[in-house]
Length: 134
Image (cartoon, rainbow, N blue to C red; front, side):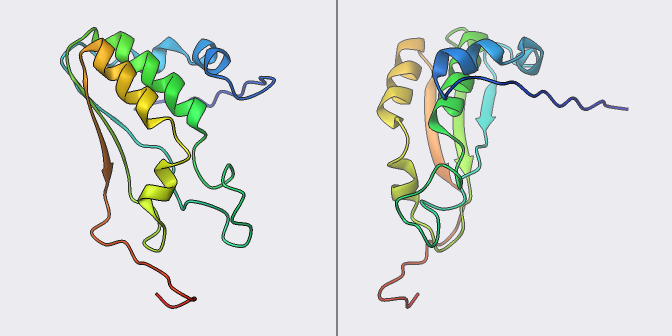
């Protein structure tokens, strides 16, 4: 039987250092050099459906993914592969979702660590809306 654990932390704001420091090492203990690691954020859509300038409540915050990526890179020790994957709503733009993220930073981090990085859209289709017509 497996056990589940829920951890709640209070941090002053979203910054990579604070999030990195509170991530429990036990979560990453299964990772060994040479593994392929999948990071699965929650990428629903590029912005709030009625307030297009708001996006933080509909996707995993960039600093969380960056802090997790940093921990995973340490565990892989230069051997392995990382894929960040999700399947957002079909009517959302994967390109616009990624525009909220420091993809170039992630690529720099993985390149410096000698780890391959893929960012994958799991959907087969992406619907495009034009004048409220899909």
